[in-house]
Length: 293
Image (tube, rainbow, N blue to C red; front, side, top):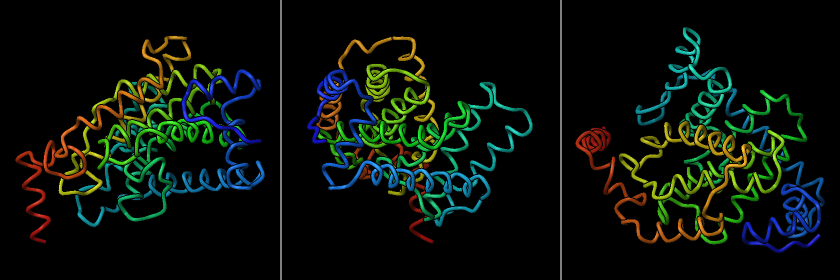
C-alpha cells in the first residue's frame, strides 16, 4: 500500500488511523516504493540481521588489530573483565557492550558489517536488537520487526538531515543510530507506537551537538568506544519511554533542532580532523606517527 510520511507526527497518525504498527507501515511503504512484496522486504531485512549476527560472532572471537594498530582488541579485553568479575549491571549490559565493540572492530578489520545508518555507527543497532532479542527470547519475526522499526526512525530523520558526520557531526551518525535503536528496543519490549517514537526522541535530543572529530581521520578514535556508549544510551531512552516519561519537545522539533545544530557546528568539528580530539596533543602525535609509518 502507498504511504507517504516524512515526519514522526504523520507516521503516528497513519499508525493510529490504520491500527497498525510502525514496522507494518514501513514494510508496506518499502514494498510499494521498490515494487517488492512485503515478504521480499522482510527477507532482505533478515539478510541484514544475519550479517549483523555474523559480525558479532566473528568480532567476539578476534583480537586482530586494525591496519593502523590503534584498535581491535578492546572487545577481547572487555570479555576478559566480564569473565573474571561480571558487569555491575548484569548480563544484558555485558552483551550490549561487547556486541557493539565486536561489530565496530569487525568494521575496522574491513570485514562485513551493516551500515546502520553508517559504517561509523554500525555497532549500535545490532548490539541493542540482538542482545535484547536474546534476553526476551524474541523469534526471527520479531527481530525483523525491530530492525524495520529502526529503519523507519532513520528514514524520517534522513528526510531533513544527511546522515554524515561531514554534514552534521556525529549526532547524525551515532546519535541517529541510538535513536533508531531506542525505538527498536521498545518494539522488542512490547511498547506501543507512541512509546517507540518517544524513545527515539529522548535518545536524539540528549545527544544533540555531538561532534565528529576522528583522530588522524580514521573511524577508530573515538568512534569505536562511542558506539558502546550510544548503545547503552538507547537503552536508557527506551526504559524511560516504557515508563511513559515523555520528551517535552516533540520529536519532529528535535530533528529540526538537530539540523540547526549541525548547521551551526564548526566545520572543524565535522569529520575534518581539524578540531576536538583530533587536535589534542596526543591526537596530533598519533597522526604524526601514522604518517611516518
